[in-house]
Length: 141
Image (tube, rainbow, N blue to C red; front, side, top):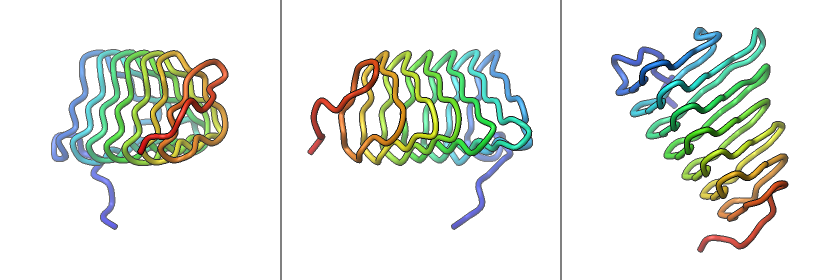
């Protein structure tokens, strides 16, 4: 496995106006990552954040951890999303607008999280979840 690229200028990372990186030395990006306007990434003194390849994070999102927060490849994170704590988002996940994910949580590959949901714990691969608290509505084929 190749080490992630941490230099945005060399890896196709787009960081829009007003993005704040707190603990930037503990934040890393894959290739082709987009961070929307006024998004905040905060890796506390014992935390780390990695956003993997081909992932899009919408405007005014907050991703914060004192542990490990990993967003897998080909993930779409809608605007106004909050992700806090030890969270692992697997590949090909769609996270709806204004969703809140509170760790420890694992979001399985291919899952879809409806707008405004509050997620804690494990979301099964290919599950479609919504609500506060989030519950499984169905599974994607």
